[in-house]
Length: 307
Image (cartoon, rainbow, N blue to C red; front, side, top):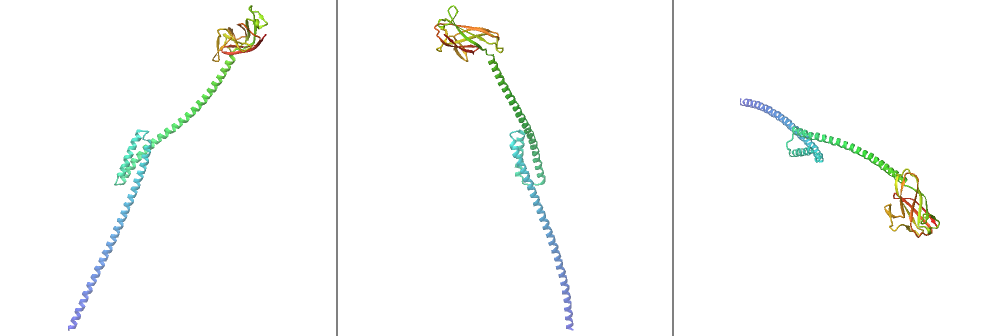
């Protein structure tokens, strides 16, 4: 009977043990499921955090690129404004404004798209102002080039006109000179005779007290009519000028020239015969040289041999 009792106890114990083991297995499986779910949730959270962090980093890098681009554009604008600031007061004021924006950019620590857009608008406004001034400057430069080209053209025309005027003036001067030269009177048929005290011609010059010089002034339509003072210079065979004790002179080419005798002649653009007398003594045989002057010009010369 005792053996059967022990056997019944052992069988109940095994059943109890088996039931406990089955419940323990179920609990372990539950824990595993929870752990797996937690691991999946943790992995998802980690992946989401990583993606968010990476997106934020990408956004920051993009903002940084935009910031650097704005700074670069602003720096370029500042350089352009600086090169023009002395030309216009408004440009100088815009340069101050651009420098202020640059300082704000350098001090900015919190970046977002709103601020980026605000800076882009400000820089865009400055850029628009700059383009407007550059367009005005280009227009002024084009106008200046046109004016310079027109000025050069006018200068060439003026230079050509001046050259023509100079040539015309030179030709006019030459013509005037030719007219002046053509207007000079000419003496021809110059001759000299010896006269005695009774104004009779003598064959021997030693017997003469007067020398009469005869010549003709030719007609010249270019010469101005009117009275002329005509001078004669008589040089003796030994080369001395025959003159009076007072040694009178007249102007010839800016010099004072001594003469032998003179007289007034009424010239009317026609041939006129002229005789001028020189009174003296001690005349010698030989060749006498005679020169005739009027209006400051030498109008004729000749040589006459006297016995």
